[in-house]
Length: 98
Image 1 (cartoon, one colour):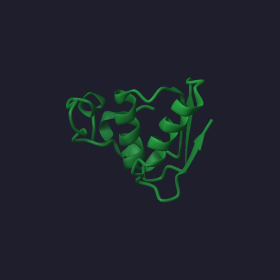
Image 2: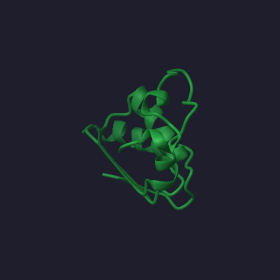
Image 3: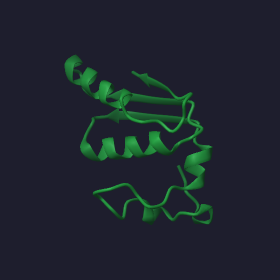
Image 4: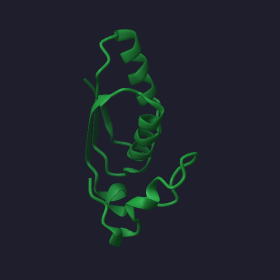
């Protein structure tokens, strides 16, 4: 993803605040992202924060595909359950786990 500064937000502003959500959301993210594919998702806190931000602020997201590197089925199910419970900005977003 590329976030041009002219769309209301410089990429450096996104993660200035580690403890809370960024103050700025690029228009290209809010209105342009339709498909998200995240490979090797591990469920680390920083990944959860970014996944939460992306799902919450992508209003035109149609499909979010997450694949895990975890071979433990129990851990993988927990990771995917957490993702499924995250708030989404798009009511038509389909979550796919592979």
